Structures are given as C-alpha cells and as structure tokens.
Length: 241
Image 1 (spheres, rainbow, N blue to C red):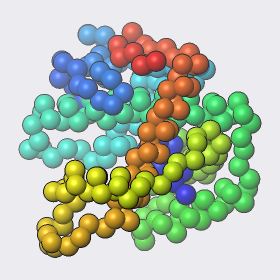
Image 2 (tube, rainbow, N blue to C red; image 1 turned 180 degrees about the vertical axis):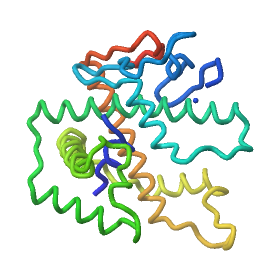
Image 3 (tube, rainbow, N blue to C red; image 1 turned 30 degrees about the vertical axis):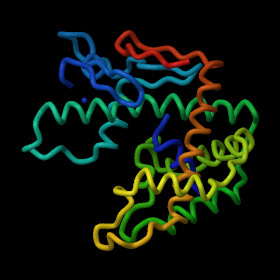
Image 4 (cartoon, one colour; image 1 turned 45 degrees about the vertical axis):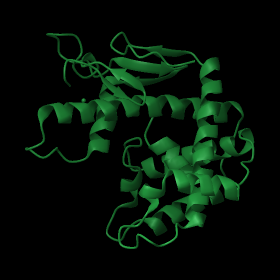
C-alpha cells in the first residue's frame, strides 16, 4: 500500500529577490513576504482549486514541516533561499495535484470501509521505526490528533480513484530492462562490488514505478483542464493546461 506516498508525497490540503524554479513553477519572494513594506498576510489565499484554498500561512507551515530543523549556520544564505523556494514550490504543486485527485474521488463517490482504514493504519504502524510516532510519517497533513487517520482515508480514496481510472500497466520487457541498464550502467554499479551483475528485478520494479508516475501525471493533467484554478497576484506561475 503506497497511500500515494500518501497523497503525492504529502501534504494537505526559498528568498533571494529572484525566483527559484521548483516543480510547481516560479516562486517569487513576495510569496513568502507579501507586498514590500507590508506585514505578510498569512490568511491570503495563494491558490485555489475549485472551492479548496491554500493560504500563505498553511503553505509556509507545510514548507517548515518538510524542511524540518533549521539549516546549519555555515550554509550560504543563497543556498538556504534556493532550498526554501524549491520546497515551497513543491508544497503548492502537491496541493493542486492532491485536490484535483481528491475532488474527483468525491465526485465519483469513492469511499473506504472501516476495515480498509484500520488495515492501512496497522500497516503504517508496523512500518514505523521503533521509537517514532507513526503520525510523524505523515507530519505535513492536517493538524490535530486525527490527522493520521484523515490522511489514510484521503490516500485510500485517491488510490481507489487511480485504480479505476488508470489503464493497467504492462511489465517492462527484457529489452527495456537491458536498455535501461546499458544507459545507466555507471549509476547502477555498486562501488563495493563493481563487477557484480545489476539486479534486473530491481530495475524492472523501477521501470514499473516510473511508468506509473507518468500515467498519474498524465491523468492529473486531464483533471486540470476541467478545474478552475486561481492564483494570488503573488503567484505568477500559471498552471500548465
């Protein structure tokens, strides 16, 4: 169970005067700071997907959760800025993807049974390293004592949506696997065993995962075309349609 890494790698729903390119587009400094000379408005809506909104405050909270601890003091300021911008851009991108999928699941009235929810929760707890709170696995979900359960439900809904909406992926052929190994031979070689053969089963799994990710991205684009996505004036990156 991937729980869509729940919900696409996570979450709900860095500052250099220039813009940094993240997966979700260009993020200007104003996204963090608001208008020059003004106090940042944390309730400002940065982006909306139909009726769902992401505020500046929530976006920054998500960014801080993903970044974790403060950067080491020796890290150059421009490097810190670049990292923060990249993470914030990913937060916005993930919010859009998550909402598009979740809203489509709701439209199709997809649900999860109590048995499915409890099974997913047990699996997460089983995979949680000893001494860690299982909620930490999905730390950038909604705040509150029930956040883990809510994220699991969301993940199950999205997984079911993808199961009925995406075509069954065929296994990569032996020729596909050989071509990938030849193209990435240096990266696949193990330093401690440079002459050892590449694990073809792992390459096969990797190729299947890549094909799945590409199929999900293509499906999300079809949902984008039907959605009403609005940006704040401080977010200049258009959603590609």
